[in-house]
Image (cartoon, rainbow, N blue to C red):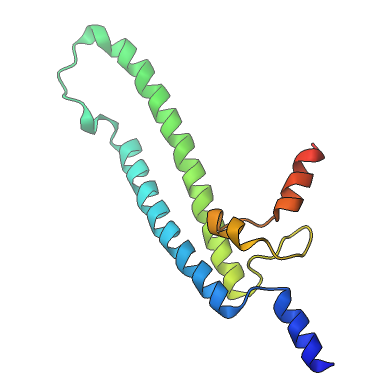
Amino acid sequence: MVKKKEENIESTRYSDADLQEFKQLIMGKLESAKDEFTKMQKTIQNPNENGDGNTSNQYLTLDDGASTFEKENLNQLAARQKKFIDNLIAALTRIENKTYGICRVTGKLIQKERLMAVPHATLSMEAKLNQYKNK
């Protein structure tokens, strides 16, 4: 009986080797995401870095509108990137807790292929599809 119980526990979570593989994948994505976020922040803080400084006054009004639009767009992208970073960090926490890869709705293992594509996923495809059906 004890052996069967151990097998059942093992099938409800990924093995330590699998978790290490996911951790390496997430760490790589996290490093890239942080680099991209840093670049976005620098661009937001120094918007005229690419300008030549010789723009005549007649074009400033048009340029201000485009600049504002670009800054708002960049702020939205940075916010999305920050959320992505936070989700990756949360995934690393789940790996440490050995709860990574378990669907928060069904309690079943999320397919490995899905986790390789979306390593911060917390829903299985079954749960994700049901979420869209219920909307």
